[in-house]
Length: 447
Image (cartoon, rainbow, N blue to C red; front, side):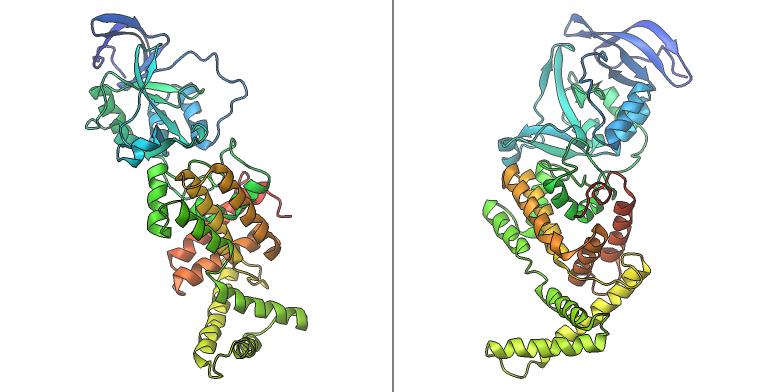
């Protein structure tokens, strides 16, 4: 039971009109700041020592719907007055604050701009969940942050300010940033699902159908495994600074020129050309022979074709090393396909026809990150993503076939037949995508 005698933090004083229940108490509050009395324009809530101001419910867009499961959970908690649940959702989600690109580039990304709110007669620090991020702008960026770090007592915030969660939307709630309230917010519960937890996250207010959505779907294995919305376009994974670090560390991309070069390489599908060469020989044999090709026949044809090609370009006849590498590759592919069938990635008599999905799926993802990092425009990213989708279509006849090709490329690149996390996490992600009703495999027809 919450007692009405609990002191209000900071500049608040209680004018007690209480209604108690087993877990919550609503207290009509007035704000007294700097010697002036300013009434809160609507109800403030005092539940388990959490202070929150909830604006009137009128004036919202009647067509609004929760963009994702996160906002749906926030709306449910808000309607039920479950402020502990509301905070736990925030702790389990990626949250973002707004800043200028110039500030972020100069190392001042965590100096959070404030906005004057005439209803509260004070400044607010807006904080957004991924689904409610405003449309991307060239000179405005968003920095990802864990909610508990934002409200930690040692965080550099003005105790007179409010934290405005998704302002202007039906899930908006305002928390006073007094030391006492921040302590309480930082202590509440544990994250239900942490940021970047793998899963199929869909934003209904982002592309879900059409050529851009199809291209984004080609990168869904990567984005779902990262815990990012598969159809986000403009804001990346966990904010501007995070996406820039990701591109630099994993791709060597640090500016517009290096992004352009990397995308050109991926769209040209040169990273796995030897894998594609070996697979294409099996495909050609199957067309000629009208059925499955055994590994012995496959290796023999690889040896013959390689010899013909090397002789045409004047290479010495002794190409034992090259043949050995490609014949070992045949064995690796066969063993991976056996495991794929056992784990349901391939039908019992199926095999991987192409690994083009590996490069082209990553091209769509890199274009998405490039736009989020402001190394290219949104329109440029959309063109690249659309092109990746166009290029990949002829190689597969289903999303499941694309997934098998993508996972084969990933395993040949990283896994070394260990069947470790590079493989296992993709198996789980493919299963999640196959079962997700709002994911691209269910909403986007292949042809």
